Image (cartoon, rainbow, N blue to C red; front, side, top):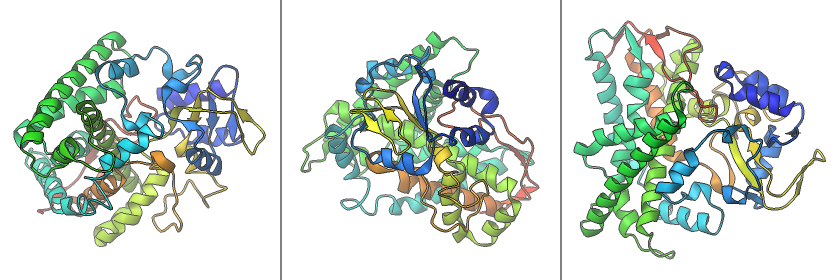
Length: 420
């Protein structure tokens, strides 16, 4: 039964609304059927496992990928590992902790408490420029919000964060496009060709970053890449390959999740025009709106391919064996009625929104402060400047990816765009 539900979740026909399937999963907190993965879908059980040191994120600890629907016919991980070593996202302590600490030194508190805050004005300028470009493209009555706004915005931000020269940002956009296509494959395309293109993009990105890292070591400019490449702290310095892997992680993970957060956010607001009107009148509402969005429509729906390092007995009495494939369905936990009252209702006034939208524990989203700021600025400014926005297609066409879930296009109409 589990495998049948999982295949329904992965099936594209369920992409627009997987939540009834998650409700079915929650009837049994730990589902397992035959050779498939163990699936945990309830809030408290997921959170417990996210904080359990016996749960590994390192795929090398997986006893066998057999029976895991996400592994079938997928050479993406092999393509990635052939070019770069695993990022800290796919490592366990102590290697994970060391690399995460070293990455955090130039990014956030306590060593760099103002890095994200000081980008606010620059982010606002990027948002303004993208919306101005929409209004300058002729007919503003029809907009694909993904193509024209929520897709280019985060990759531009990542470029500025790392310190990519402005004249090279267009090259980063091309690499991001290719890598995103690898994460969101066309079912009719040749898988081998997809892996080849993705590996080629990773190789080009790695070679470019290697040159930039060497330049920043010689002539640091104060950006994050300069500090990753030349920084010295209690953990020493990163190797060139570790800087490459970390930079690629920031580009790919930071970009893809923020695209979905902004797009899911605008889709939700257009489906709830009363909340959109409130945001237009009160920009400060963007902060609680983003938190509720992270619960209600999280950009990362599930964490697959975790594995226990020892047998783990769950409160339900099910034992998840060492080496088993484990899936944590974050989006299902976020709508668990045992944790959230009326969980299928979008409510930015909801108290105590301790969601799982950014994970929890040692692998919680590294870029959470930046993602929150980007989404709040983007949604607030879109609400203010788009006149009478409305959906042209509901549901919109979604991306193929069931893990990083969001619309591939978001066609909307508006009566005009107000000046900045």
